[in-house]
Length: 201
Image (cartoon, rainbow, N blue to C red; front, side, top):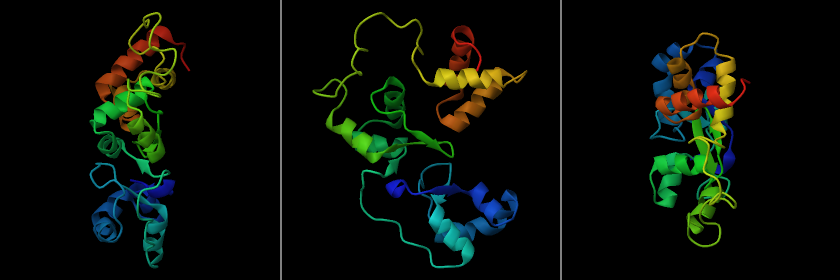
């Protein structure tokens, strides 16, 4: 969790601020740093930290204590949002794609959502009462032309294709998956669909 939407930093940027190569930082400096400054998402393979805490460590000053307790501005990753909603992390990502929750934002390749948005969905589950189900106007009507119609990731895929030159599709998909979350296979499908339905750009 990122408490109250505080600024964050990853180890590559920490190493840059320390003026050492990332490999050197991870081998020589990271173990001591990690003992003093805890990753905000300890169960994630992507390590990010509170910016103020990281800077205090680098400056050799006392490390500030993070705000305690839950707050509407906290940013949750898919696993934390899933715990609030009582669903799986993959369901949270599907909700974001389908419009059941806002799309969230990506910080250092981790998709996060404000706690307020997740709590609002918890109070109004899909299909149950006010606010449940699909957004207005999407429950009935014409069938989608394709599975990803209306998916905002199509435009991301289209932009990636326009910049790809001769890069193999699988490599583009793997890069997008790392940047934006989701599986490489899903991004391959999105890239294929974007090439068929959207102008490059």
